[in-house]
Length: 316
Figure 1: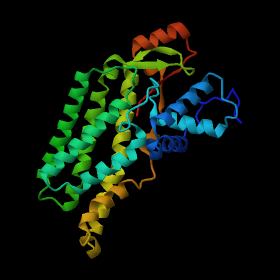
Figure 2 (figure 1 turned 135 degrees about the vertical axis):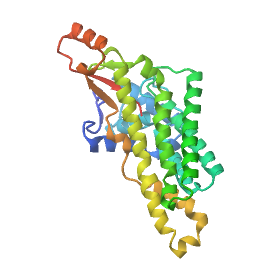
Figure 3 (figure 1 turned 120 degrees about the vertical axis):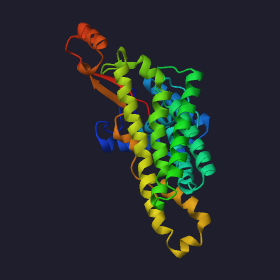
Figure 4 (figure 1 turned 90 degrees about the horizontal axis):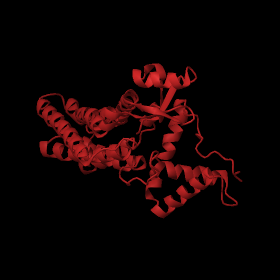
């Protein structure tokens, strides 16, 4: 039985350790939660909010609270509390990312196929990036459009250019073209989609969540970590899997089932046991001494040396 003093926002696992963050992100990206109806998610949100208000329904157990928080974290934005669109949720990354990555790796030989699947991938990424942005920094429809077009153009130019360049290269090199395109596009897509954070800064708080100001340096650090995480997310499947497939395709039984190569790659992409989002804490921190001079001086004038670090949501 859970008590009314139960802290539902306290991390279930230690977020200062890699293994703690790994368990946390596997928990909130459980793709089974993407199948639940909105009514069930809303019930979970109501239970979380009741717990925060200290008015738990009679008979509520800690396990029920942990599961409600899992559903809440998987479907509701941490800044706004609004329910996120299904495709943009991190819980949809496994089925959605598996299918698209598998198709990019399978259909890389012709320019039309490269163009189509890179467009699909960047459309998917743009929606995910927008959904998981730091919502305290609004972005206009025009900025969203520019970010989408720029990232898609970058991916297509990289993929088509390298595809043509590697026509005479070893087959394995050509298989790595999709990863090069995805990596280069991520370096453009994420900063462009979250440009307001870079221009205007994001909210930074003290350890207790009290807002201290807006920081562009904090935004740059958070976005950089997200870019690294997204590229790392693609790396295992898009670098190692082509090596595996090239070797498998030499066997006669694989040559007889070419129609299954795509589904096989989709399943192998989803077989990873490492979640790149766990590389960095969701609640990112930065030393006050590394903030922009104006904000640093403001904090020190109000609080002296009592605050050494600031905290912020880096997004996903």
